[in-house]
Length: 509
Image 1 (cartoon, rainbow, N blue to C red):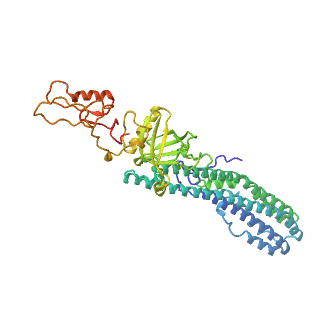
Image 2: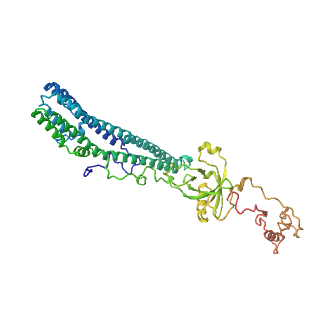
């Protein structure tokens, strides 16, 4: 008979769907079921003792029946598991006590029959209950321990995420790669998924055991009925009075519906047993502290290709993320559940040099910080070449990386390698050039001539000339400027000295 109309509360044995680490004890259900098995084991043990003592009573007649009565005079152990109203297991024992008092005589032959036909049935039932107890202990009860272990692991990582999420704001966003809240959050997701898998597996095991309990209890009741029927046959040769008393005991046992005790058990313990109608837990419906903290949301994330250091391997695709902590992390994929999402590579962008963008490609030079403080200090600096799906996608990545590195966004195309950047403090002054041309006539009492020595005849396109302030004609200096521009040099007419030939100031790549 199915569990129609059986009440279940959505607390206790059922786990809430919005808590990362529920405060319920997963072993409550298994402990309750184990205790119920103990109750039936003791109940069957009582019956075995009853039949055994009946054999002795058959020898000693009336006096020995007093001993039989003593075996069932004590209240049932774990008696709260049975319905105390008439019609159940507790009612059966009440009938046994009242009818045994009236039995005074028995026969020696009855003793032999009881020993050979009734006791083996109860002994087999006792063994079945013990085996059921072992099955539950090794299966569902062991699974409850695994759930506890998984929940403790998840709780530790949630607390670690909270600690470093709080430290993120107080430290100005400077955190270690291993303590990046984004990484810690993905670690929480991974362990939370493992916890939910263990919880669902344990739930399925307990639900299967719980559903089988009704059938098992029906089997226990039916076996007890079978044993009591055999017992009736053994004592049928006794007097009619004895037969009437034993018939009353048997009829009481047979009137117990197979699901009577289990329905009452479910009704009394509906707050602990699992409700089959409650759906399984899902990670997507679970929330936990700092799940949506600003430090866990990436500035940009997606697929990029990175050129391998081995010349023959070319580019390989990966999943890359730029976090608010200013790290560029590389992962094999964006799956948080398949395995622990540990970065394959982590670059702390403020310590890196970002090269220019060339179509779909751009370069970043820096050290791998994914191995911790010691590992990052010993790591070599490498120039990494990246390739996006399109120039527009590359522009987004390049601009975000430059902004995170503190270099700011720069428009236009610049050199693609950061290796050639120069130090402004070490920049050399422009060289002095030798004047090899004849100077134009200069009026008397005018300012000294501009020094233009050192410029070669070819490549610069001019020779020395004097400048007459206020003159209305084109001077040799103006002529020089036009020749310099036509020659393609980087001469600056405002400063009177050649430039470096670079479009932007040193370091702005």
